[in-house]
Amino acid sequence: MKKYWLVAVSLVLVLAVVGFSGCTGSPTTIGTVDINSQQSGIWVNGTGEVTVTPDIATLSLGIEAQADTVAEAQEQAAVAMEAVMAALADNGVAEKDIQTRHFSIYQVTRWDDFKDEQVVVGYRVTNMVTAKIRDIEQAGPIIDAVAAAGGDYTRINNISFSVDDPTPYYEQARQKAVADAKAKAEQLADLAGVNLGKPTYISEGTIYPPIVYRDAGMEAMAPAPTTPISPGEIELSLTVQVAYAIAD
Image (cartoon, rainbow, N blue to C red; front, side, top):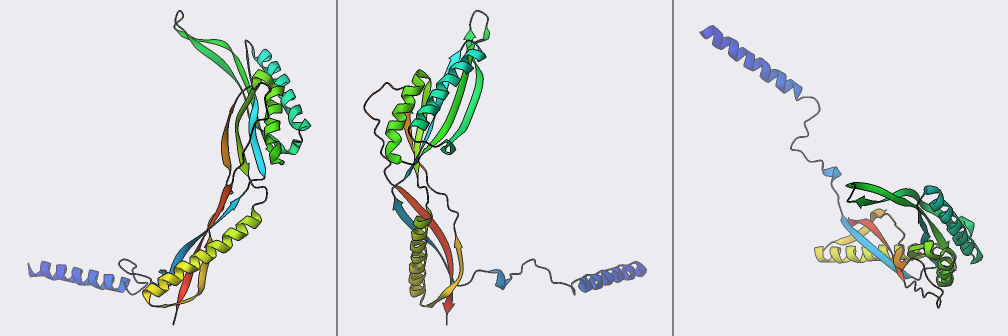
């Protein structure tokens, strides 16, 4: 019996020695904290906003035709779309500023109670484009011209407004964002009773140029007084994150 106890004790000692020697390499990270990886100083976020009057209008427009056959629907759509494109060109919209965004041909069905199934009643062709209007004051007259050219096939989904070159406005917003961040950091330092040091880290948030949409709410339009279009104003915003050191 003593023999077995001696063997057991020996095994425990061997395991203890192996375990200890295994710890002499790199130390385990469980339950430890790397102080160097922690943020130090004063970290703040700043926001800058600039109000801008849009100078670009983008129309989402096109045609939609339905007929008994695909060929008939396609022909109607092609004729109407050709007239719409000509109206855009005649009103100063450049070819490079017109882009096809959606084209589809699909069956139109209805439920037949007698047959107890869906039956095909026709085919619908839809052709939608976006047209960039660089002379924003011409947005209303262009809408009228397109509606007249396409007739009952005309579809105008919405109009959006943006800025052609937002770069100088973002420069202003950036200045405001950095000033906002500094003001916050100075207040925090004052409240904490420390001296604010120099910035040690600056990061700018992702910029997404704003686009303001308006629902045009129009299909075919009869000739009428020029459609009123109001671009209003848009806000460009930018954020920064800044880390300041704590001075001695």
